[in-house]
Length: 441
Image 1 (cartoon, rainbow, N blue to C red):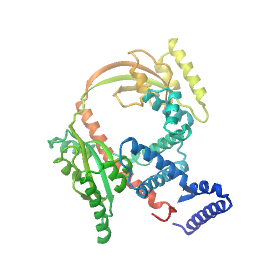
Image 2: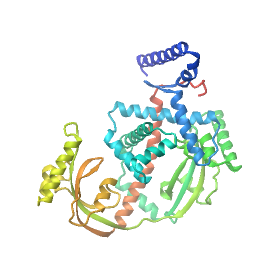
Image 3: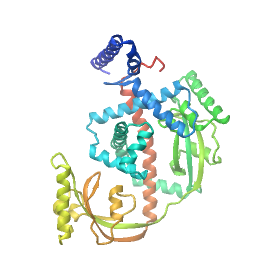
Image 4: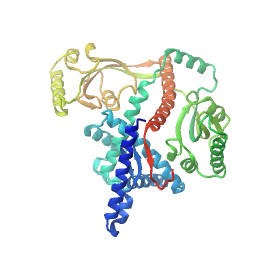
């Protein structure tokens, strides 16, 4: 790190520290608790994390654990887990802000409306439900904005850079065809005690002992989520290390060898990998198969994108005009070629045969509601305003295509998970982080 940058960060930390002490000295005795609550507990590059932020996130996590019926880990352990999560999130949000990644209010409103709809509530009822749980709507709104930004940042920095070659798919399918367990699916929970591959014997022994302590707790009947929250170094440790359902082809060979002989509810022995010491719980197991016959839709669309030049209302007005022209006999292909701001414009907006799940939910829902030949009302998606026309539908045997698509998705998911963890570690290693939580960390 350049000396000037280190010195600048030191000055920032020192200034913030002096400011905090000065405010505390100037406060009246009756305000001492407030000053203490807002003290700085971590400096993260050019930003800080306060005691108030940590307490707020701690309360949310404890409420979540309580609803799940999970005993809470010791407070110092929970503080460390939550603080590390806050630091990781803060670093990612800083990178997003520095690179211009933002979520506008309209997109945020649409997302929150979908969340309310999924809970079968209107917005008034949804606000009331949040307040009943002690969550301010304003904070919930900003938390959702952050979650969207983090998801888009991962997509941009990691997922979009993952490539899968046709040769990799061929090798995957060849290996799959030679296995008898390829249809097995496993629901897994995971604890990781991270350990360097070439650490000192003393360090590795200490970390191994930590993993053995976690395993002993599990064998004594302690809830897996509680043990995960206390011992695991995975990003989702507070959620019990849940990995969800994975096919056998998505699971590293080390894990699969252990899982194949386990029954639902059983705990694996400690497994050693280059990342550290692992403990697995087989939550459930099932035989899986993907449907090979799918309902396809041949559709076309026109897209108008709001921008800095074209406001949201102007984009909607332009789309309303196009819809009126279509209703009055306008030619869809000609209008798409002339006005659509999509790569399909040259083809008259033709999307070809669309499989379920290939378009965003708003688009797919509107498309599925149309009969062949019917044109939709203007539809808003994250990309802009659409009008959609369904040309025809068919049921298609997608055996070969589905097998290759599934193989591509599984290979990419495996690569993406590994690349994301590596990227997070690199981001963390490059950052300046100073802990001030009573020198615990």
